[in-house]
Image (cartoon, rainbow, N blue to C red; front, side):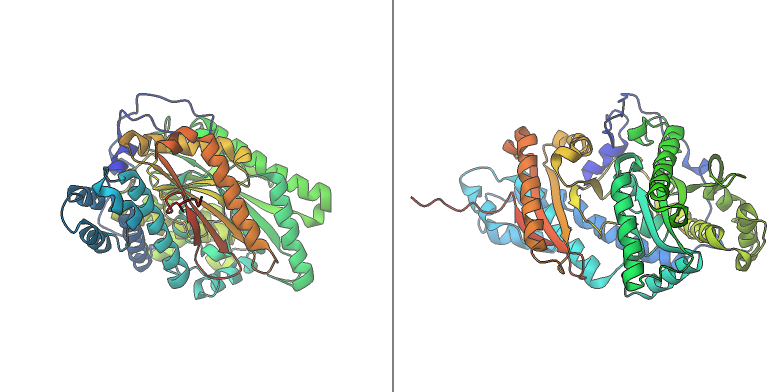
Length: 509
């Protein structure tokens, strides 16, 4: 899709991921990508080639379904005054996109120019619907709770001494694949909440911790409360190796040190809150990770001698990759063990060391993935998202630069993040006279009476607030919304309940 090129245009002012971003008109020239990693035809001995191929096919198929929209609509626009336009337009759409177009929009082409903005938004929403259906029905990432991969990982997590894994990445679309791709963790085994700058809400996280511990006491899930395991909270901030001064985390002004420090501050505040409220025996374990959004390599912060997370003591998976690519599998594994512990063998690792070892090994496959399919570094080093996701949910989104997240209960509460998303898409879409597609989602528990109806009301409430806040864009047809809900207790996909593009009912007089 031609719009994606805007993400790397040198003269394009990139939108931020949070309101502290200062804009710059001059974007540095991208350096030689060959210098970023060891570019060769060789695969790393620890890389999972079969898994990489499968993940790439999923990424390619999904993103193509969105990126084919513009070329398809151009083809349809060319024939809008021909005979049998409606039939031919639907045929083209089915052939290229696998979806039907709204007849109430196509029908008006004989009296006024075809509403291409409306058709574009419709196509994005329907492709999201297809994408969601495929994710929940076919489990293409092999990460559902019933999958072998999820069951094995949950057992591994308990063996490491953790009964729950809670990860907060930045809401930037370049981190949406953190769980399933970068860390290669089954999505159902992780509690994921994205926030701008990875600055999660401490009170809400404490409440989720309470629910987790309550379930252990009442139901013995995922293990008994008497077992000596902990709640592992991870913050994943991000930085850019290609353009560090402009493409780092905008919530922290592309200041990598600040991003790490603020992430650590949130982690410590969470731990202190739990210990102050429920005593030291109810403590949690913490982990701070940096993600290079250009290569998907990780910077893992290790503990200092005092046992606290160190901002200076880090290991780079990219450095490990480069230093071990020509070694044997056994030598590579031994080098990783020596970096994170005093033991040379994986079998001797315990607790956090065992967990870190797995993350490093998994990430080596992802570095190979980027090298093989993206020439070592992604071309879209900036924003190139396809739609904005607003509300609570989106469990199905695990692809880089597919969605800009704005997790919120109310627009007033989440206005700063949402405004940033609108700013980003003003550059990506509005500058090309295309609308901003916003998918509103509220997941609910079908076990709770009235929860579905409340989720629908939440969608309507947020939708109304968006239409007021961005009135000018809405009136110009430059912002469209799609309201969706999903029962989180089932494996069903998201359900569309309405769109701003729905056919208007004539008023009775």
